Image (cartoon, rainbow, N blue to C red):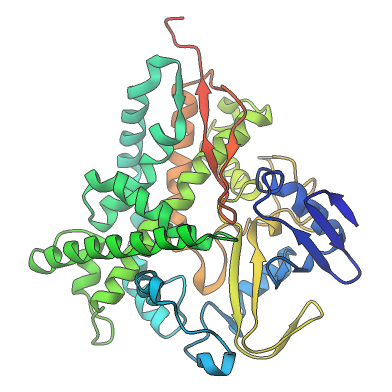
Length: 419
């Protein structure tokens, strides 16, 4: 059954045809997700040649199932799985990913995460609130009297990358370069990426890694009160992180620590302005602010897809899977499961339903979630309080970066006190 010209669903065979690079899809994927939920929440995506799962309980279960993993070469080899050899032209990207928290499994994952987890617990992150507040006010001071702004470049891009750089111990003045490297790096995760995307990602990985190695050398000689110094000089069961592990971990923290939040600030502002709700009521107190933030995370998640390798033969929702298969879950679609949420396509900050899965679950639950939530709960109320007559200047355009979800730009206007 065809629901739109870019989406074709066969609910009997559980097959879906969907061009993820079609603007009608990535501009408003929730419409497609709703159709998929109605007809085949578990489906084989023809273009991706892979099984996808969108049901909330199934997705939640997959993310926690240790029979599935982010890597498989720790228990099998390429010959057994009929996998091609790594491409030499992506050697820098592959090296940067080799020890990534997002890509490894225990015991390596446990060791790395244990070393940095302390810095990301909520009580530690909460200490950053005053700095986040001060930076938000400083940025708004720069454009408040102008009556208009492109919010992503003037606000959303700056806050997350500045805060994660401070936390890790990276000089803030390199923030624009970090953004550039990160945007090129995550191009590797796009569907139907081009050779140019891959070349840019490998170049970014090489430059990013070279820069981080320089900072590591500085911190070895002169430790500071930052996360990088902590990772360098702290041992776990008699072992220290290698330079390659330090580079991979720093890159993933810098990328994950801001990439999603940059998108989510823009997504949240857009959703709130289009919702018709009065911002002053949404941010009246800490509880209403938290509910509002969680609802924006549910309805416009910044990261849509996570993949898993099948580590042993199993069956999920009547789909037989064998060791070496790769499957995907769609977090953003799980957040719209009508079995869990009433009127799931409607923004409703009064919800008291299932917690969203936007940060994942299980051992790979996003380590930066407390920081992202703190930033959103801090800067959104400040923005709407400082600019109480905020409005969209024009319809925002969504970036062609599926399976991330964010805006190309967000042009806003308001009436200044002098008008």
